[in-house]
Image (cartoon, rainbow, N blue to C red; front, side):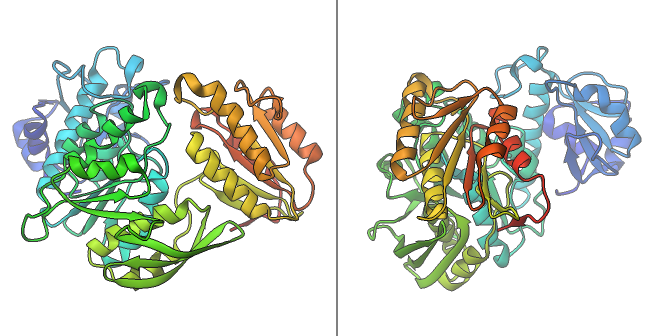
Length: 483
């Protein structure tokens, strides 16, 4: 984070000083922001945000005792603070909802966004890369970090920090030594991505795909495409001098994404499996669920052998390579980085082998029909012809009125692909060809009794289902090998 005084923080956010004199505010600096009072330290600005169980305002004194320079708050606290009034921000795009009845949390989020925009404005040489899509955002964000880091210091969000807290929080980790900032943009409704882009304006925007995730909120894939396209609409014109021109990196294999070329003032670069894409894959092969291919770019070609699992990772890798080449990497450098990349975020196609030969594939972070199909394809690739495949599945949330049909269709696809057993955990009806159990405990009881040496078990569901506990339960033994 660039260093700011508390006086600057107050000026940027429109906040007022509390338990601070003007002289103290002018001489006290902030070098980091933190929303967990247990992690704040000297030079930190503690973000007083409400949550489902606790309210950060109640931990202001503890943050100050740990050395925090001040608290960014939406109401008075028992500590030195910059207090941002809630008036005028209740309608801000915020995930806080019912846990923020007085708007104090929304006020802090809005102020945090102003700080991030101000800090990024002081870093004109920083290349900001934004990524969105219905599936693959986090994997692609991690691949982007892998391919850009060899070119210079790169900041990317931990896990899926992709909302109105995660975006400015990540952006504020950039400083004068940072060359690239990679951000993942998610949306729960129209205008959300545009709001995130206003906080951290990207110069390069990557759109991966338009699928069924959040179909319940958007109503149609066209509505989802409209929201995802907000990213490329905010990019600067492509003809700006001095390396400041905008670049829209679009998936040529997805017609709704490809059509976004008409919505952006930026220069368009396409990626995809098709030979017509600017950056594409040739001679794709798979072994044990991992893909290898020839990376073809306008600047040359190179071989890639991914360590990530799933054929869908080819498209994610192509998107990352397209950005890397735009930012100065050679095709060989991009290929080397892609081939060395390993999973950087939890519960996304994590492969672990038990001592008895059982392989557990933990992909329990999120699920929608497209991501489910990709995971099932990877499962059957890993299992091959000689191993029994299990799919332990939970609900796919936020996919709208067609949820029942999508769950049943997933089972049909799994069985058609050769998955031996489909175990549905919890409420979703995966149809008559699936075995239904009530909860995680019942799933573990079934699996422990019936899986055998050499079996491959995929665990996948939307995050709210907590099915990572099934994977953890299966891996409570010695002799585990992560690969």
